Amino acid sequence: MILTSNDILNVVLAICIAVLTFFLCLAIYYFVDSVKRINKITKKVEGTVTKAEEVVIMAKDKLKNSPAYFMILAELAKKAVAFVQEKKTRSKEKANKSNKK
Image (cartoon, rainbow, N blue to C red; front, side, top):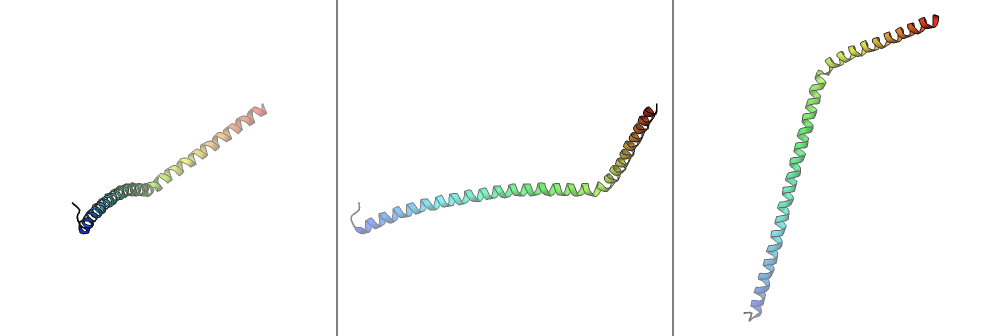
């Protein structure tokens, strides 16, 4: 039992060490949990950066081939404009012929 002040000191020190150990274990647990979360976030960011990099590379490849596509689209646009103008002139000619009769 507790007979002297030295025994009381030892009991108090034991309780303090137990409480300190509990809080240190709790702090280590939260630290490890935070590191896990940071690791997950880092992996997600890394995946997102990788996907963005792939999109940039794909766009770069598309832009390398785009001059050929632009030339084809330009020719197609020219033909479409010529077709529309031809239709307009024909419709005007028909309107003029019907007005003359």
